[in-house]
Structures are given as C-alpha cells and as structure tokens.
Amino acid sequence: MINFKNIDYLKYGNNRQKEAYFELKELQIFEKLKAYNPILSGTIPLGIDLPNSDLDIVCECENNDEFSDVLYRLFVDKNRFEIKTKVHQGIKSTVAKFETVRFIVEIFGQNIPSDKQNAYRHMLIEYKILKEKGPEFRSEIIKLKHQGLSTEAAFTQMLGIEGNPYDELLKLEE
Image 1 (cartoon, helix red, strand yellow):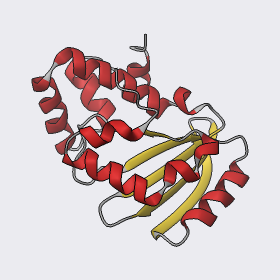
Image 2 (image 1 turned 90 degrees about the vertical axis):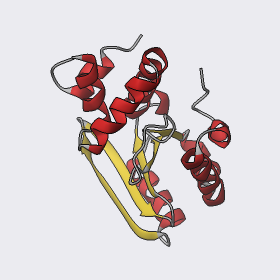
Image 3 (image 1 turned 180 degrees about the horizontal axis):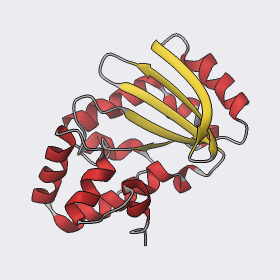
Image 4 (image 1 turned 90 degrees about the horizontal axis):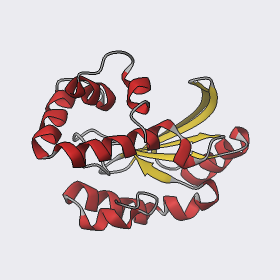
C-alpha cells in the first residue's frame, strides 16, 4: 500500500501527480504546516482527478483561530486567497483556498487527527476499491465524475450502494 502520509509517491505517478509533487515542494506547504500533520487527500493521489480537481490537504488543528492566523500569514499573498472557519459536519473547520498557476490548493483543518478525518478515510477506502476493481472501474469513476458526480457518489453508484455516499463509503472501512 502507498504511504499517503508522505508525498514522495507523487514523484513516481502520472504527469499530474508529478506536477502536484513539484508544486507542493515549491510552496513548501508540508514543511510549513508540519506541526499540523498535513496529508494530501482527494482524487489527485488516486489518479482519478479531473483537470479542475484541487489539491486537498487535511490538517489537525486544536485551535481554529490560531490555525487560521497561521494560514493567513503563510498564504495571504497567494492568488485568490480566501479563508473561513465554519461548522462542517458538526465540527469546527477552517478552510483556506488559493490558486497557483497549475492548481487550486485547499487546506482543511479540524481538531481531529489528520488520518482520522473523513477526506483521508474516503481516499483510503477508494484506493482499496480501485486496486480491487481494476482499470475499467477506474475509467467508469472518471467518466461519472466528468458527468458531474462527486467522487463518493461515483463510487457508491458503481458499487450499487444507496444512501448518502459520504456516509455509505465510510461503512466500507476495514
């Protein structure tokens, strides 16, 4: 299994993953946010991204106000920078977003260990399913995403699972 907690695997991936690796290294996001245990999550690590897919980075923050201040200080000079703190799925969450030449970067912080956050958990579940189901399944997921479905909805549709895709996927966790 890939160690998703270290972005070095991206160096050996497809072209978009390699671009993501170099972009993240250039921005030094993982170094700058080391205290918050950042993990790249989402579709780019899985190779099921669309051209407009963003780099989703989950972080653990005990204090959202402090985390927000750190993100502001580090990234306010980035193109289209925005930051907000809100309640997401019943949990206080801070989200910073900005654009680079090649990517939209979204940094998401909650007072939950990074590897226990839903985005990371979904990615691990999706990774296992993709490994098990093979390349045709992967192609169908991408096709459904092109049609406007979320990643989670595409997976649950392909698996014939009904209900809230975000909740239902988590039920597949081992």
